[in-house]
Length: 101
Length: 191
Image (cartoon, rainbow over all chains, first blue to last red; front, side, top):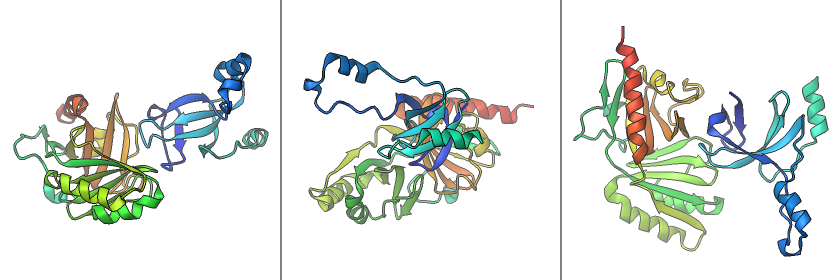
């Protein structure tokens, strides 16, 4: 079982309290009517599916209910960073380097 | 049993016999109370706290207790307000009036959930049969309130004393929660 840290509650809780909602920092096109079908498909379905350090949206659904973002290594399942929704994406290469030490 | 409770709000339902009564742990059904779900941004908190009679806690997982009132932190913009049943209507009006046109949501959720009181020296052990949360007094001090998951059911855990917990679950899930707790407690008496 993974231990997930909720930046709003300030505690680590078992993953059963959370749900993972896929890749983070996917911006919805500002004007959907002007977006081509191809771009819309990219927004809806195309994800980077990285093997390695990956940014995900998580939701503390059985806790405070808030969405937040987490950086996870998809190979080792190690969480490298948790941060609140709305905060900028951290430098992934640097995080990976720090974790690799 | 009510003397171990940190407040005068959650009291055992006198008409119901204990669900479980062992020397080291007991489960009592709590009497119905009024529950209000309050959601708002920071600007409305001070007014709401004054109207409610107890300041709304801003520290995560904490609670504030006053005379016949309790405010429980549920999320960064969400609180559960507890009060006796008979105060519900006046309290609702008071908070609504105090907030005026400040954006907020105040909803009566009294009927949504039921509470049981789990107390005794084995209370932590019993809750941990279905909850993966560290209930040691350092990590989960008296007054801490948290939503979590008990086996498959969402529950709210509020520690009102060192060995006393209020466990709240939705009405239709309560038989499941209390039933599993009672069953797990039998392990304590088994040779």
